[in-house]
Structure formats: structure tokens, C-alpha cells
Image (cartoon, rainbow, N blue to C red; front, side, top):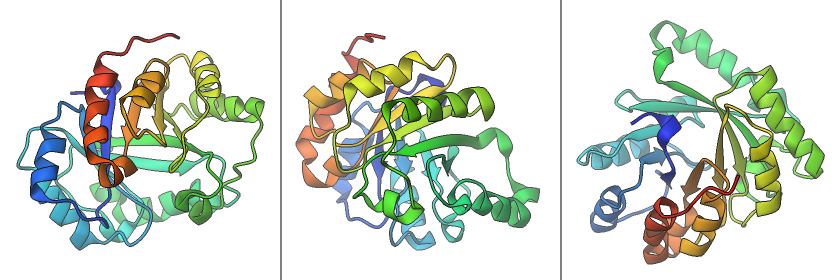
Length: 232
């Protein structure tokens, strides 16, 4: 399944614990894909352990790269974030240049999916780690989305509210300003109602923290997304 057809994905953190039974239910839930990624304590050992456990199932799996030390072959896709609202070039392009210098000769570019991140929760770990400017106005968020699509030609624009539920009105305005770039939404989806609301706007819904905090509700988000109808 191509990334462009994903409507729902679960994001699993290799630094967190999930039982084999719960992992099986996640992978067999009907989700379109599994993303392995996180911010803190991401190790190659943790990534490989989770990859091997997920590979027992047929669901597509992507590695979202946050550390060059935790890159491994064996994934269907590799998501490469560039944090467009970071105040440091490190998270926008410097790490990418370093990775190309070291691994460029072995990169399979057709497996790479560039994500233009816009991190909007000031208290989340990702915002702090990447020095993201989360005080953007509505117009500035939309401008970042247009920048991702029209200037950088990125296939994905990711509105990341990690740990809080975002503003559906703003998400809708962003969606209406994108023609071809796929809109990912992540943050605060802790049950089917919020999943359905955001799925009616964004192209792809990412469910992460609730897997570890409200597992049964997280599983219900798959059906909610599949049954939602786009309003844009």
C-alpha cells in the first residue's frame, strides 16, 4: 500500500513497552501502517526489537528517523522529518546533510518519504528538542504548509500537536491550502470521536500516545477513521 493511500497509522515508540498481545491487536487492527519512532532514548536495539516483532504481521512498517544511530534496513519506508518551524537549522537540514555524507551511497531514495513537520504544542518533547517556534499565527501555519508544498515540494506536511488535541478549524484551513501534499495530523487522539473529527479533515491520522495510555480507545480509532467522510 502506498503512503498516499494511508488514512490511519499507529506510531509505536521503541523506548516504550508494549506486550506481545497488545502489539498483535495493533498490527491486526486494520490500520494502514505502523510507524516506529520517538524523541527520547531511541536506540538501535530498541528499534530492531520492535521491528522484528512487527514483522510477524503483514501491516506495512515505516521507520521515522530521529537518530542516525538507530537506522536499520528492513523497513518498507523511511520517514525523514524536517522541522519547518524549528529555530535551528540542525533540525531542518543539517542532520540531513550529515546523514547523506555518511549513508548517501547506500540510501534507497524511493523508500524515503520527506515530512515537513510543523510542531504546535509548546510543551511536547519534540518541540523542546527541536527548538520549534510554536507561537505561530494561523496565517503563519498556513504559510508553512504552502512552503512545504510549493517551495520544497514535500510529499507530506505533518501538523504535530503531540500530547494535546489540535484545532480542527486550523487543520481544515491548512488542508484547503494544499493541492498535492499529503496532510498528516497527530496529537491528542485518544478515542474514536476525535479520530473521526480529524479524519474528516486531514488525509492521514497518526495515533501514538493513546496506545500506551488508553489502549482500547486507541484501537477504536481505526474503525472511526475508516468510517469517516471527508468534509474538505
